[in-house]
Image (cartoon, rainbow, N blue to C red; front, side, top):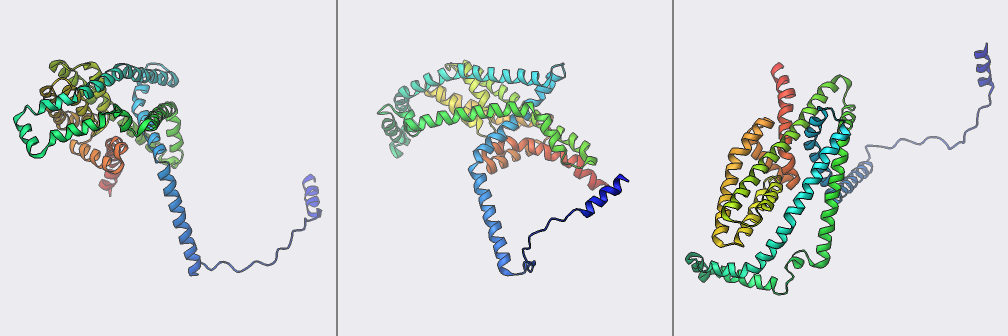
Amino acid sequence: MAIRDRLKKVRTKKEIPTADFGPLGEPVNRSNPFYFGFLATAGGLLALVVMRSLAAASQTFVLIIIALFLAMGLNPAVEALRNRGLSRTRAVSVIFALVIIFVGLFAWLVIPPVVSQGAELINRAPSLLNDLKHNATIASLNDHYGIVDTLQEKLKSITGDGTLIVSAFGGVIGVGKTVLSGTFASLTVLVLTLYFLTSLPTMINLGIRLVPSTRRDRVSRLSNAIIARIGAFVGSQIVVSVLASIFVLILSMAIGLPSPFALAMIILVCGLIPLIGHFIGCSIVTVVALTQSVSAGVIAFVAYVLYVQIENYVITPKIMRKSLAVPGAVTIIAALLGSSLLGLVGALLAVPLAAGVILILEEVVFPRADNS
């Protein structure tokens, strides 16, 4: 009875009058060329705005990608601590504390020798160039082409007023901008890495929820395997960098270079940068060796170049093949393509992405092809 009474009340309730806006017009003619032209123009403008926005925020995306890459690389260490009974928050705190300690130790060991060696190199550069003229071959080249004389004139022009470093960065304001931007970028990467490392499982689960429920288990396993391979790549790169730093430490002690431990720390960081890292490291070691003598600079350069060849064609392919199951040729080709497309970020991401692609081919594409 109560339901019938309610229905009667609803039926007898006054209807609210609606405003009359007139009859509906004819639908838009989508075949009209003006309609198509308007949509095409609007789509082109929208694409242009999106591309310009992405280009303007490219530096931010680079920092985000680097932080996410570092978080995935540190995740295996966090999982190892979790397997020993620590919570994820405590494990992340321990790993992050170790990272900060390493950064502080690196700054403490490296910055003072770099400043002192840079000043010494600038002071000894004229005498080093004069020593080059004592070599018969270089003296003959200088007589014909004036190579050493040109270097001496250039050195006098940039060091005559004692403002070499300031002029290299575009004046005092340029130095300030470089220092502030570098400090801000480093702090941003550290903070983002901490957030990503803490919430990495949540981010993975959130992404997996976008996948149909029947495929979530398989996608979850593949995602975790790809992240594990990225972590293995970072670990392998650290091992390669440690070997390079040990080599530079032995080389520095053998030929009597100053601050050998600081040089080893510099090479440890440079070794983490694919492709161009050893170019930077070789330049630093050679310049420091030139502050001692020309012969020491030549020995350091030749020895470093030989070690890099051994590392590129022997050490790195073996380590990457064992940790990532990626052939050596694929490792080198992926790094070259990544660096040519996206620069440093592409070189960092190329090898683990290649490992992920190989994993997907082995687990998804090849089984379907075999069963078809």
